[in-house]
Length: 278
Image (cartoon, rainbow, N blue to C red; front, top):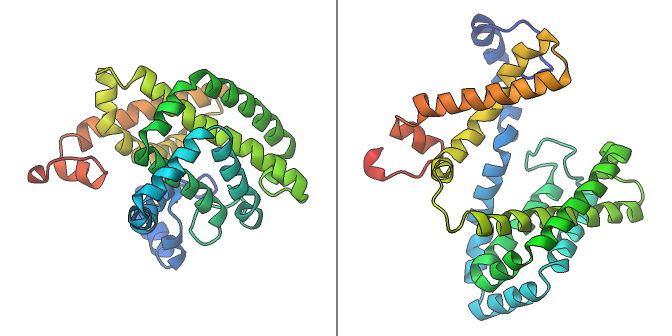
């Protein structure tokens, strides 16, 4: 992926990759600090190893009381928590201004930790999930409204959206982002419950195992395809849609012929399989 990154202007080839790029690349220890598109998998691992054991040890009755409180205020309270995370920790470590590396992105780390903990409360009290699912139309309206506002603000302020010089401005951006995040999460949960929970669709069954390999594989494939499509200068929209089609096609073919037939490769890419098959 680093080799095919657009900033590298050198001609690319197998010989150049093996004898020129690799020796220089592995001389730098900074390689271990960057995870590219796999950063969130690494963060989930940290959450499960550190935060989850603490949550499990907390008194069950106390956790249920907290979950019940969140259920009663499941619209504004999570928005306020997300907004607070961005307005405080995200003030000093702005979101999305660096590659996630667990060193300079504590704002993003905290923001995603909030989502992880809220997900745990969905497990603690099923009423929270039921309440979220019952507000499907509200989530649609809130998501569409916050999306429009956020897009307009992002177009107007661009990178300063996450690093606004004035705290009042940053607080407004934090509230909009919090509303957008929570409404998006809730909408996905409610839509999944409404349209997928009671169905046995072939596509859903297929993606149950294929989703994580697709996530891992699609980004390096995207970079490689983009490297060869960009010089063709087809225009933005043709290149965009062609890149999507070719990426989906190539990822699917690689999954079907190089991943799916081999239990060990499936295991390495996060597919749940029986241990006896490895």
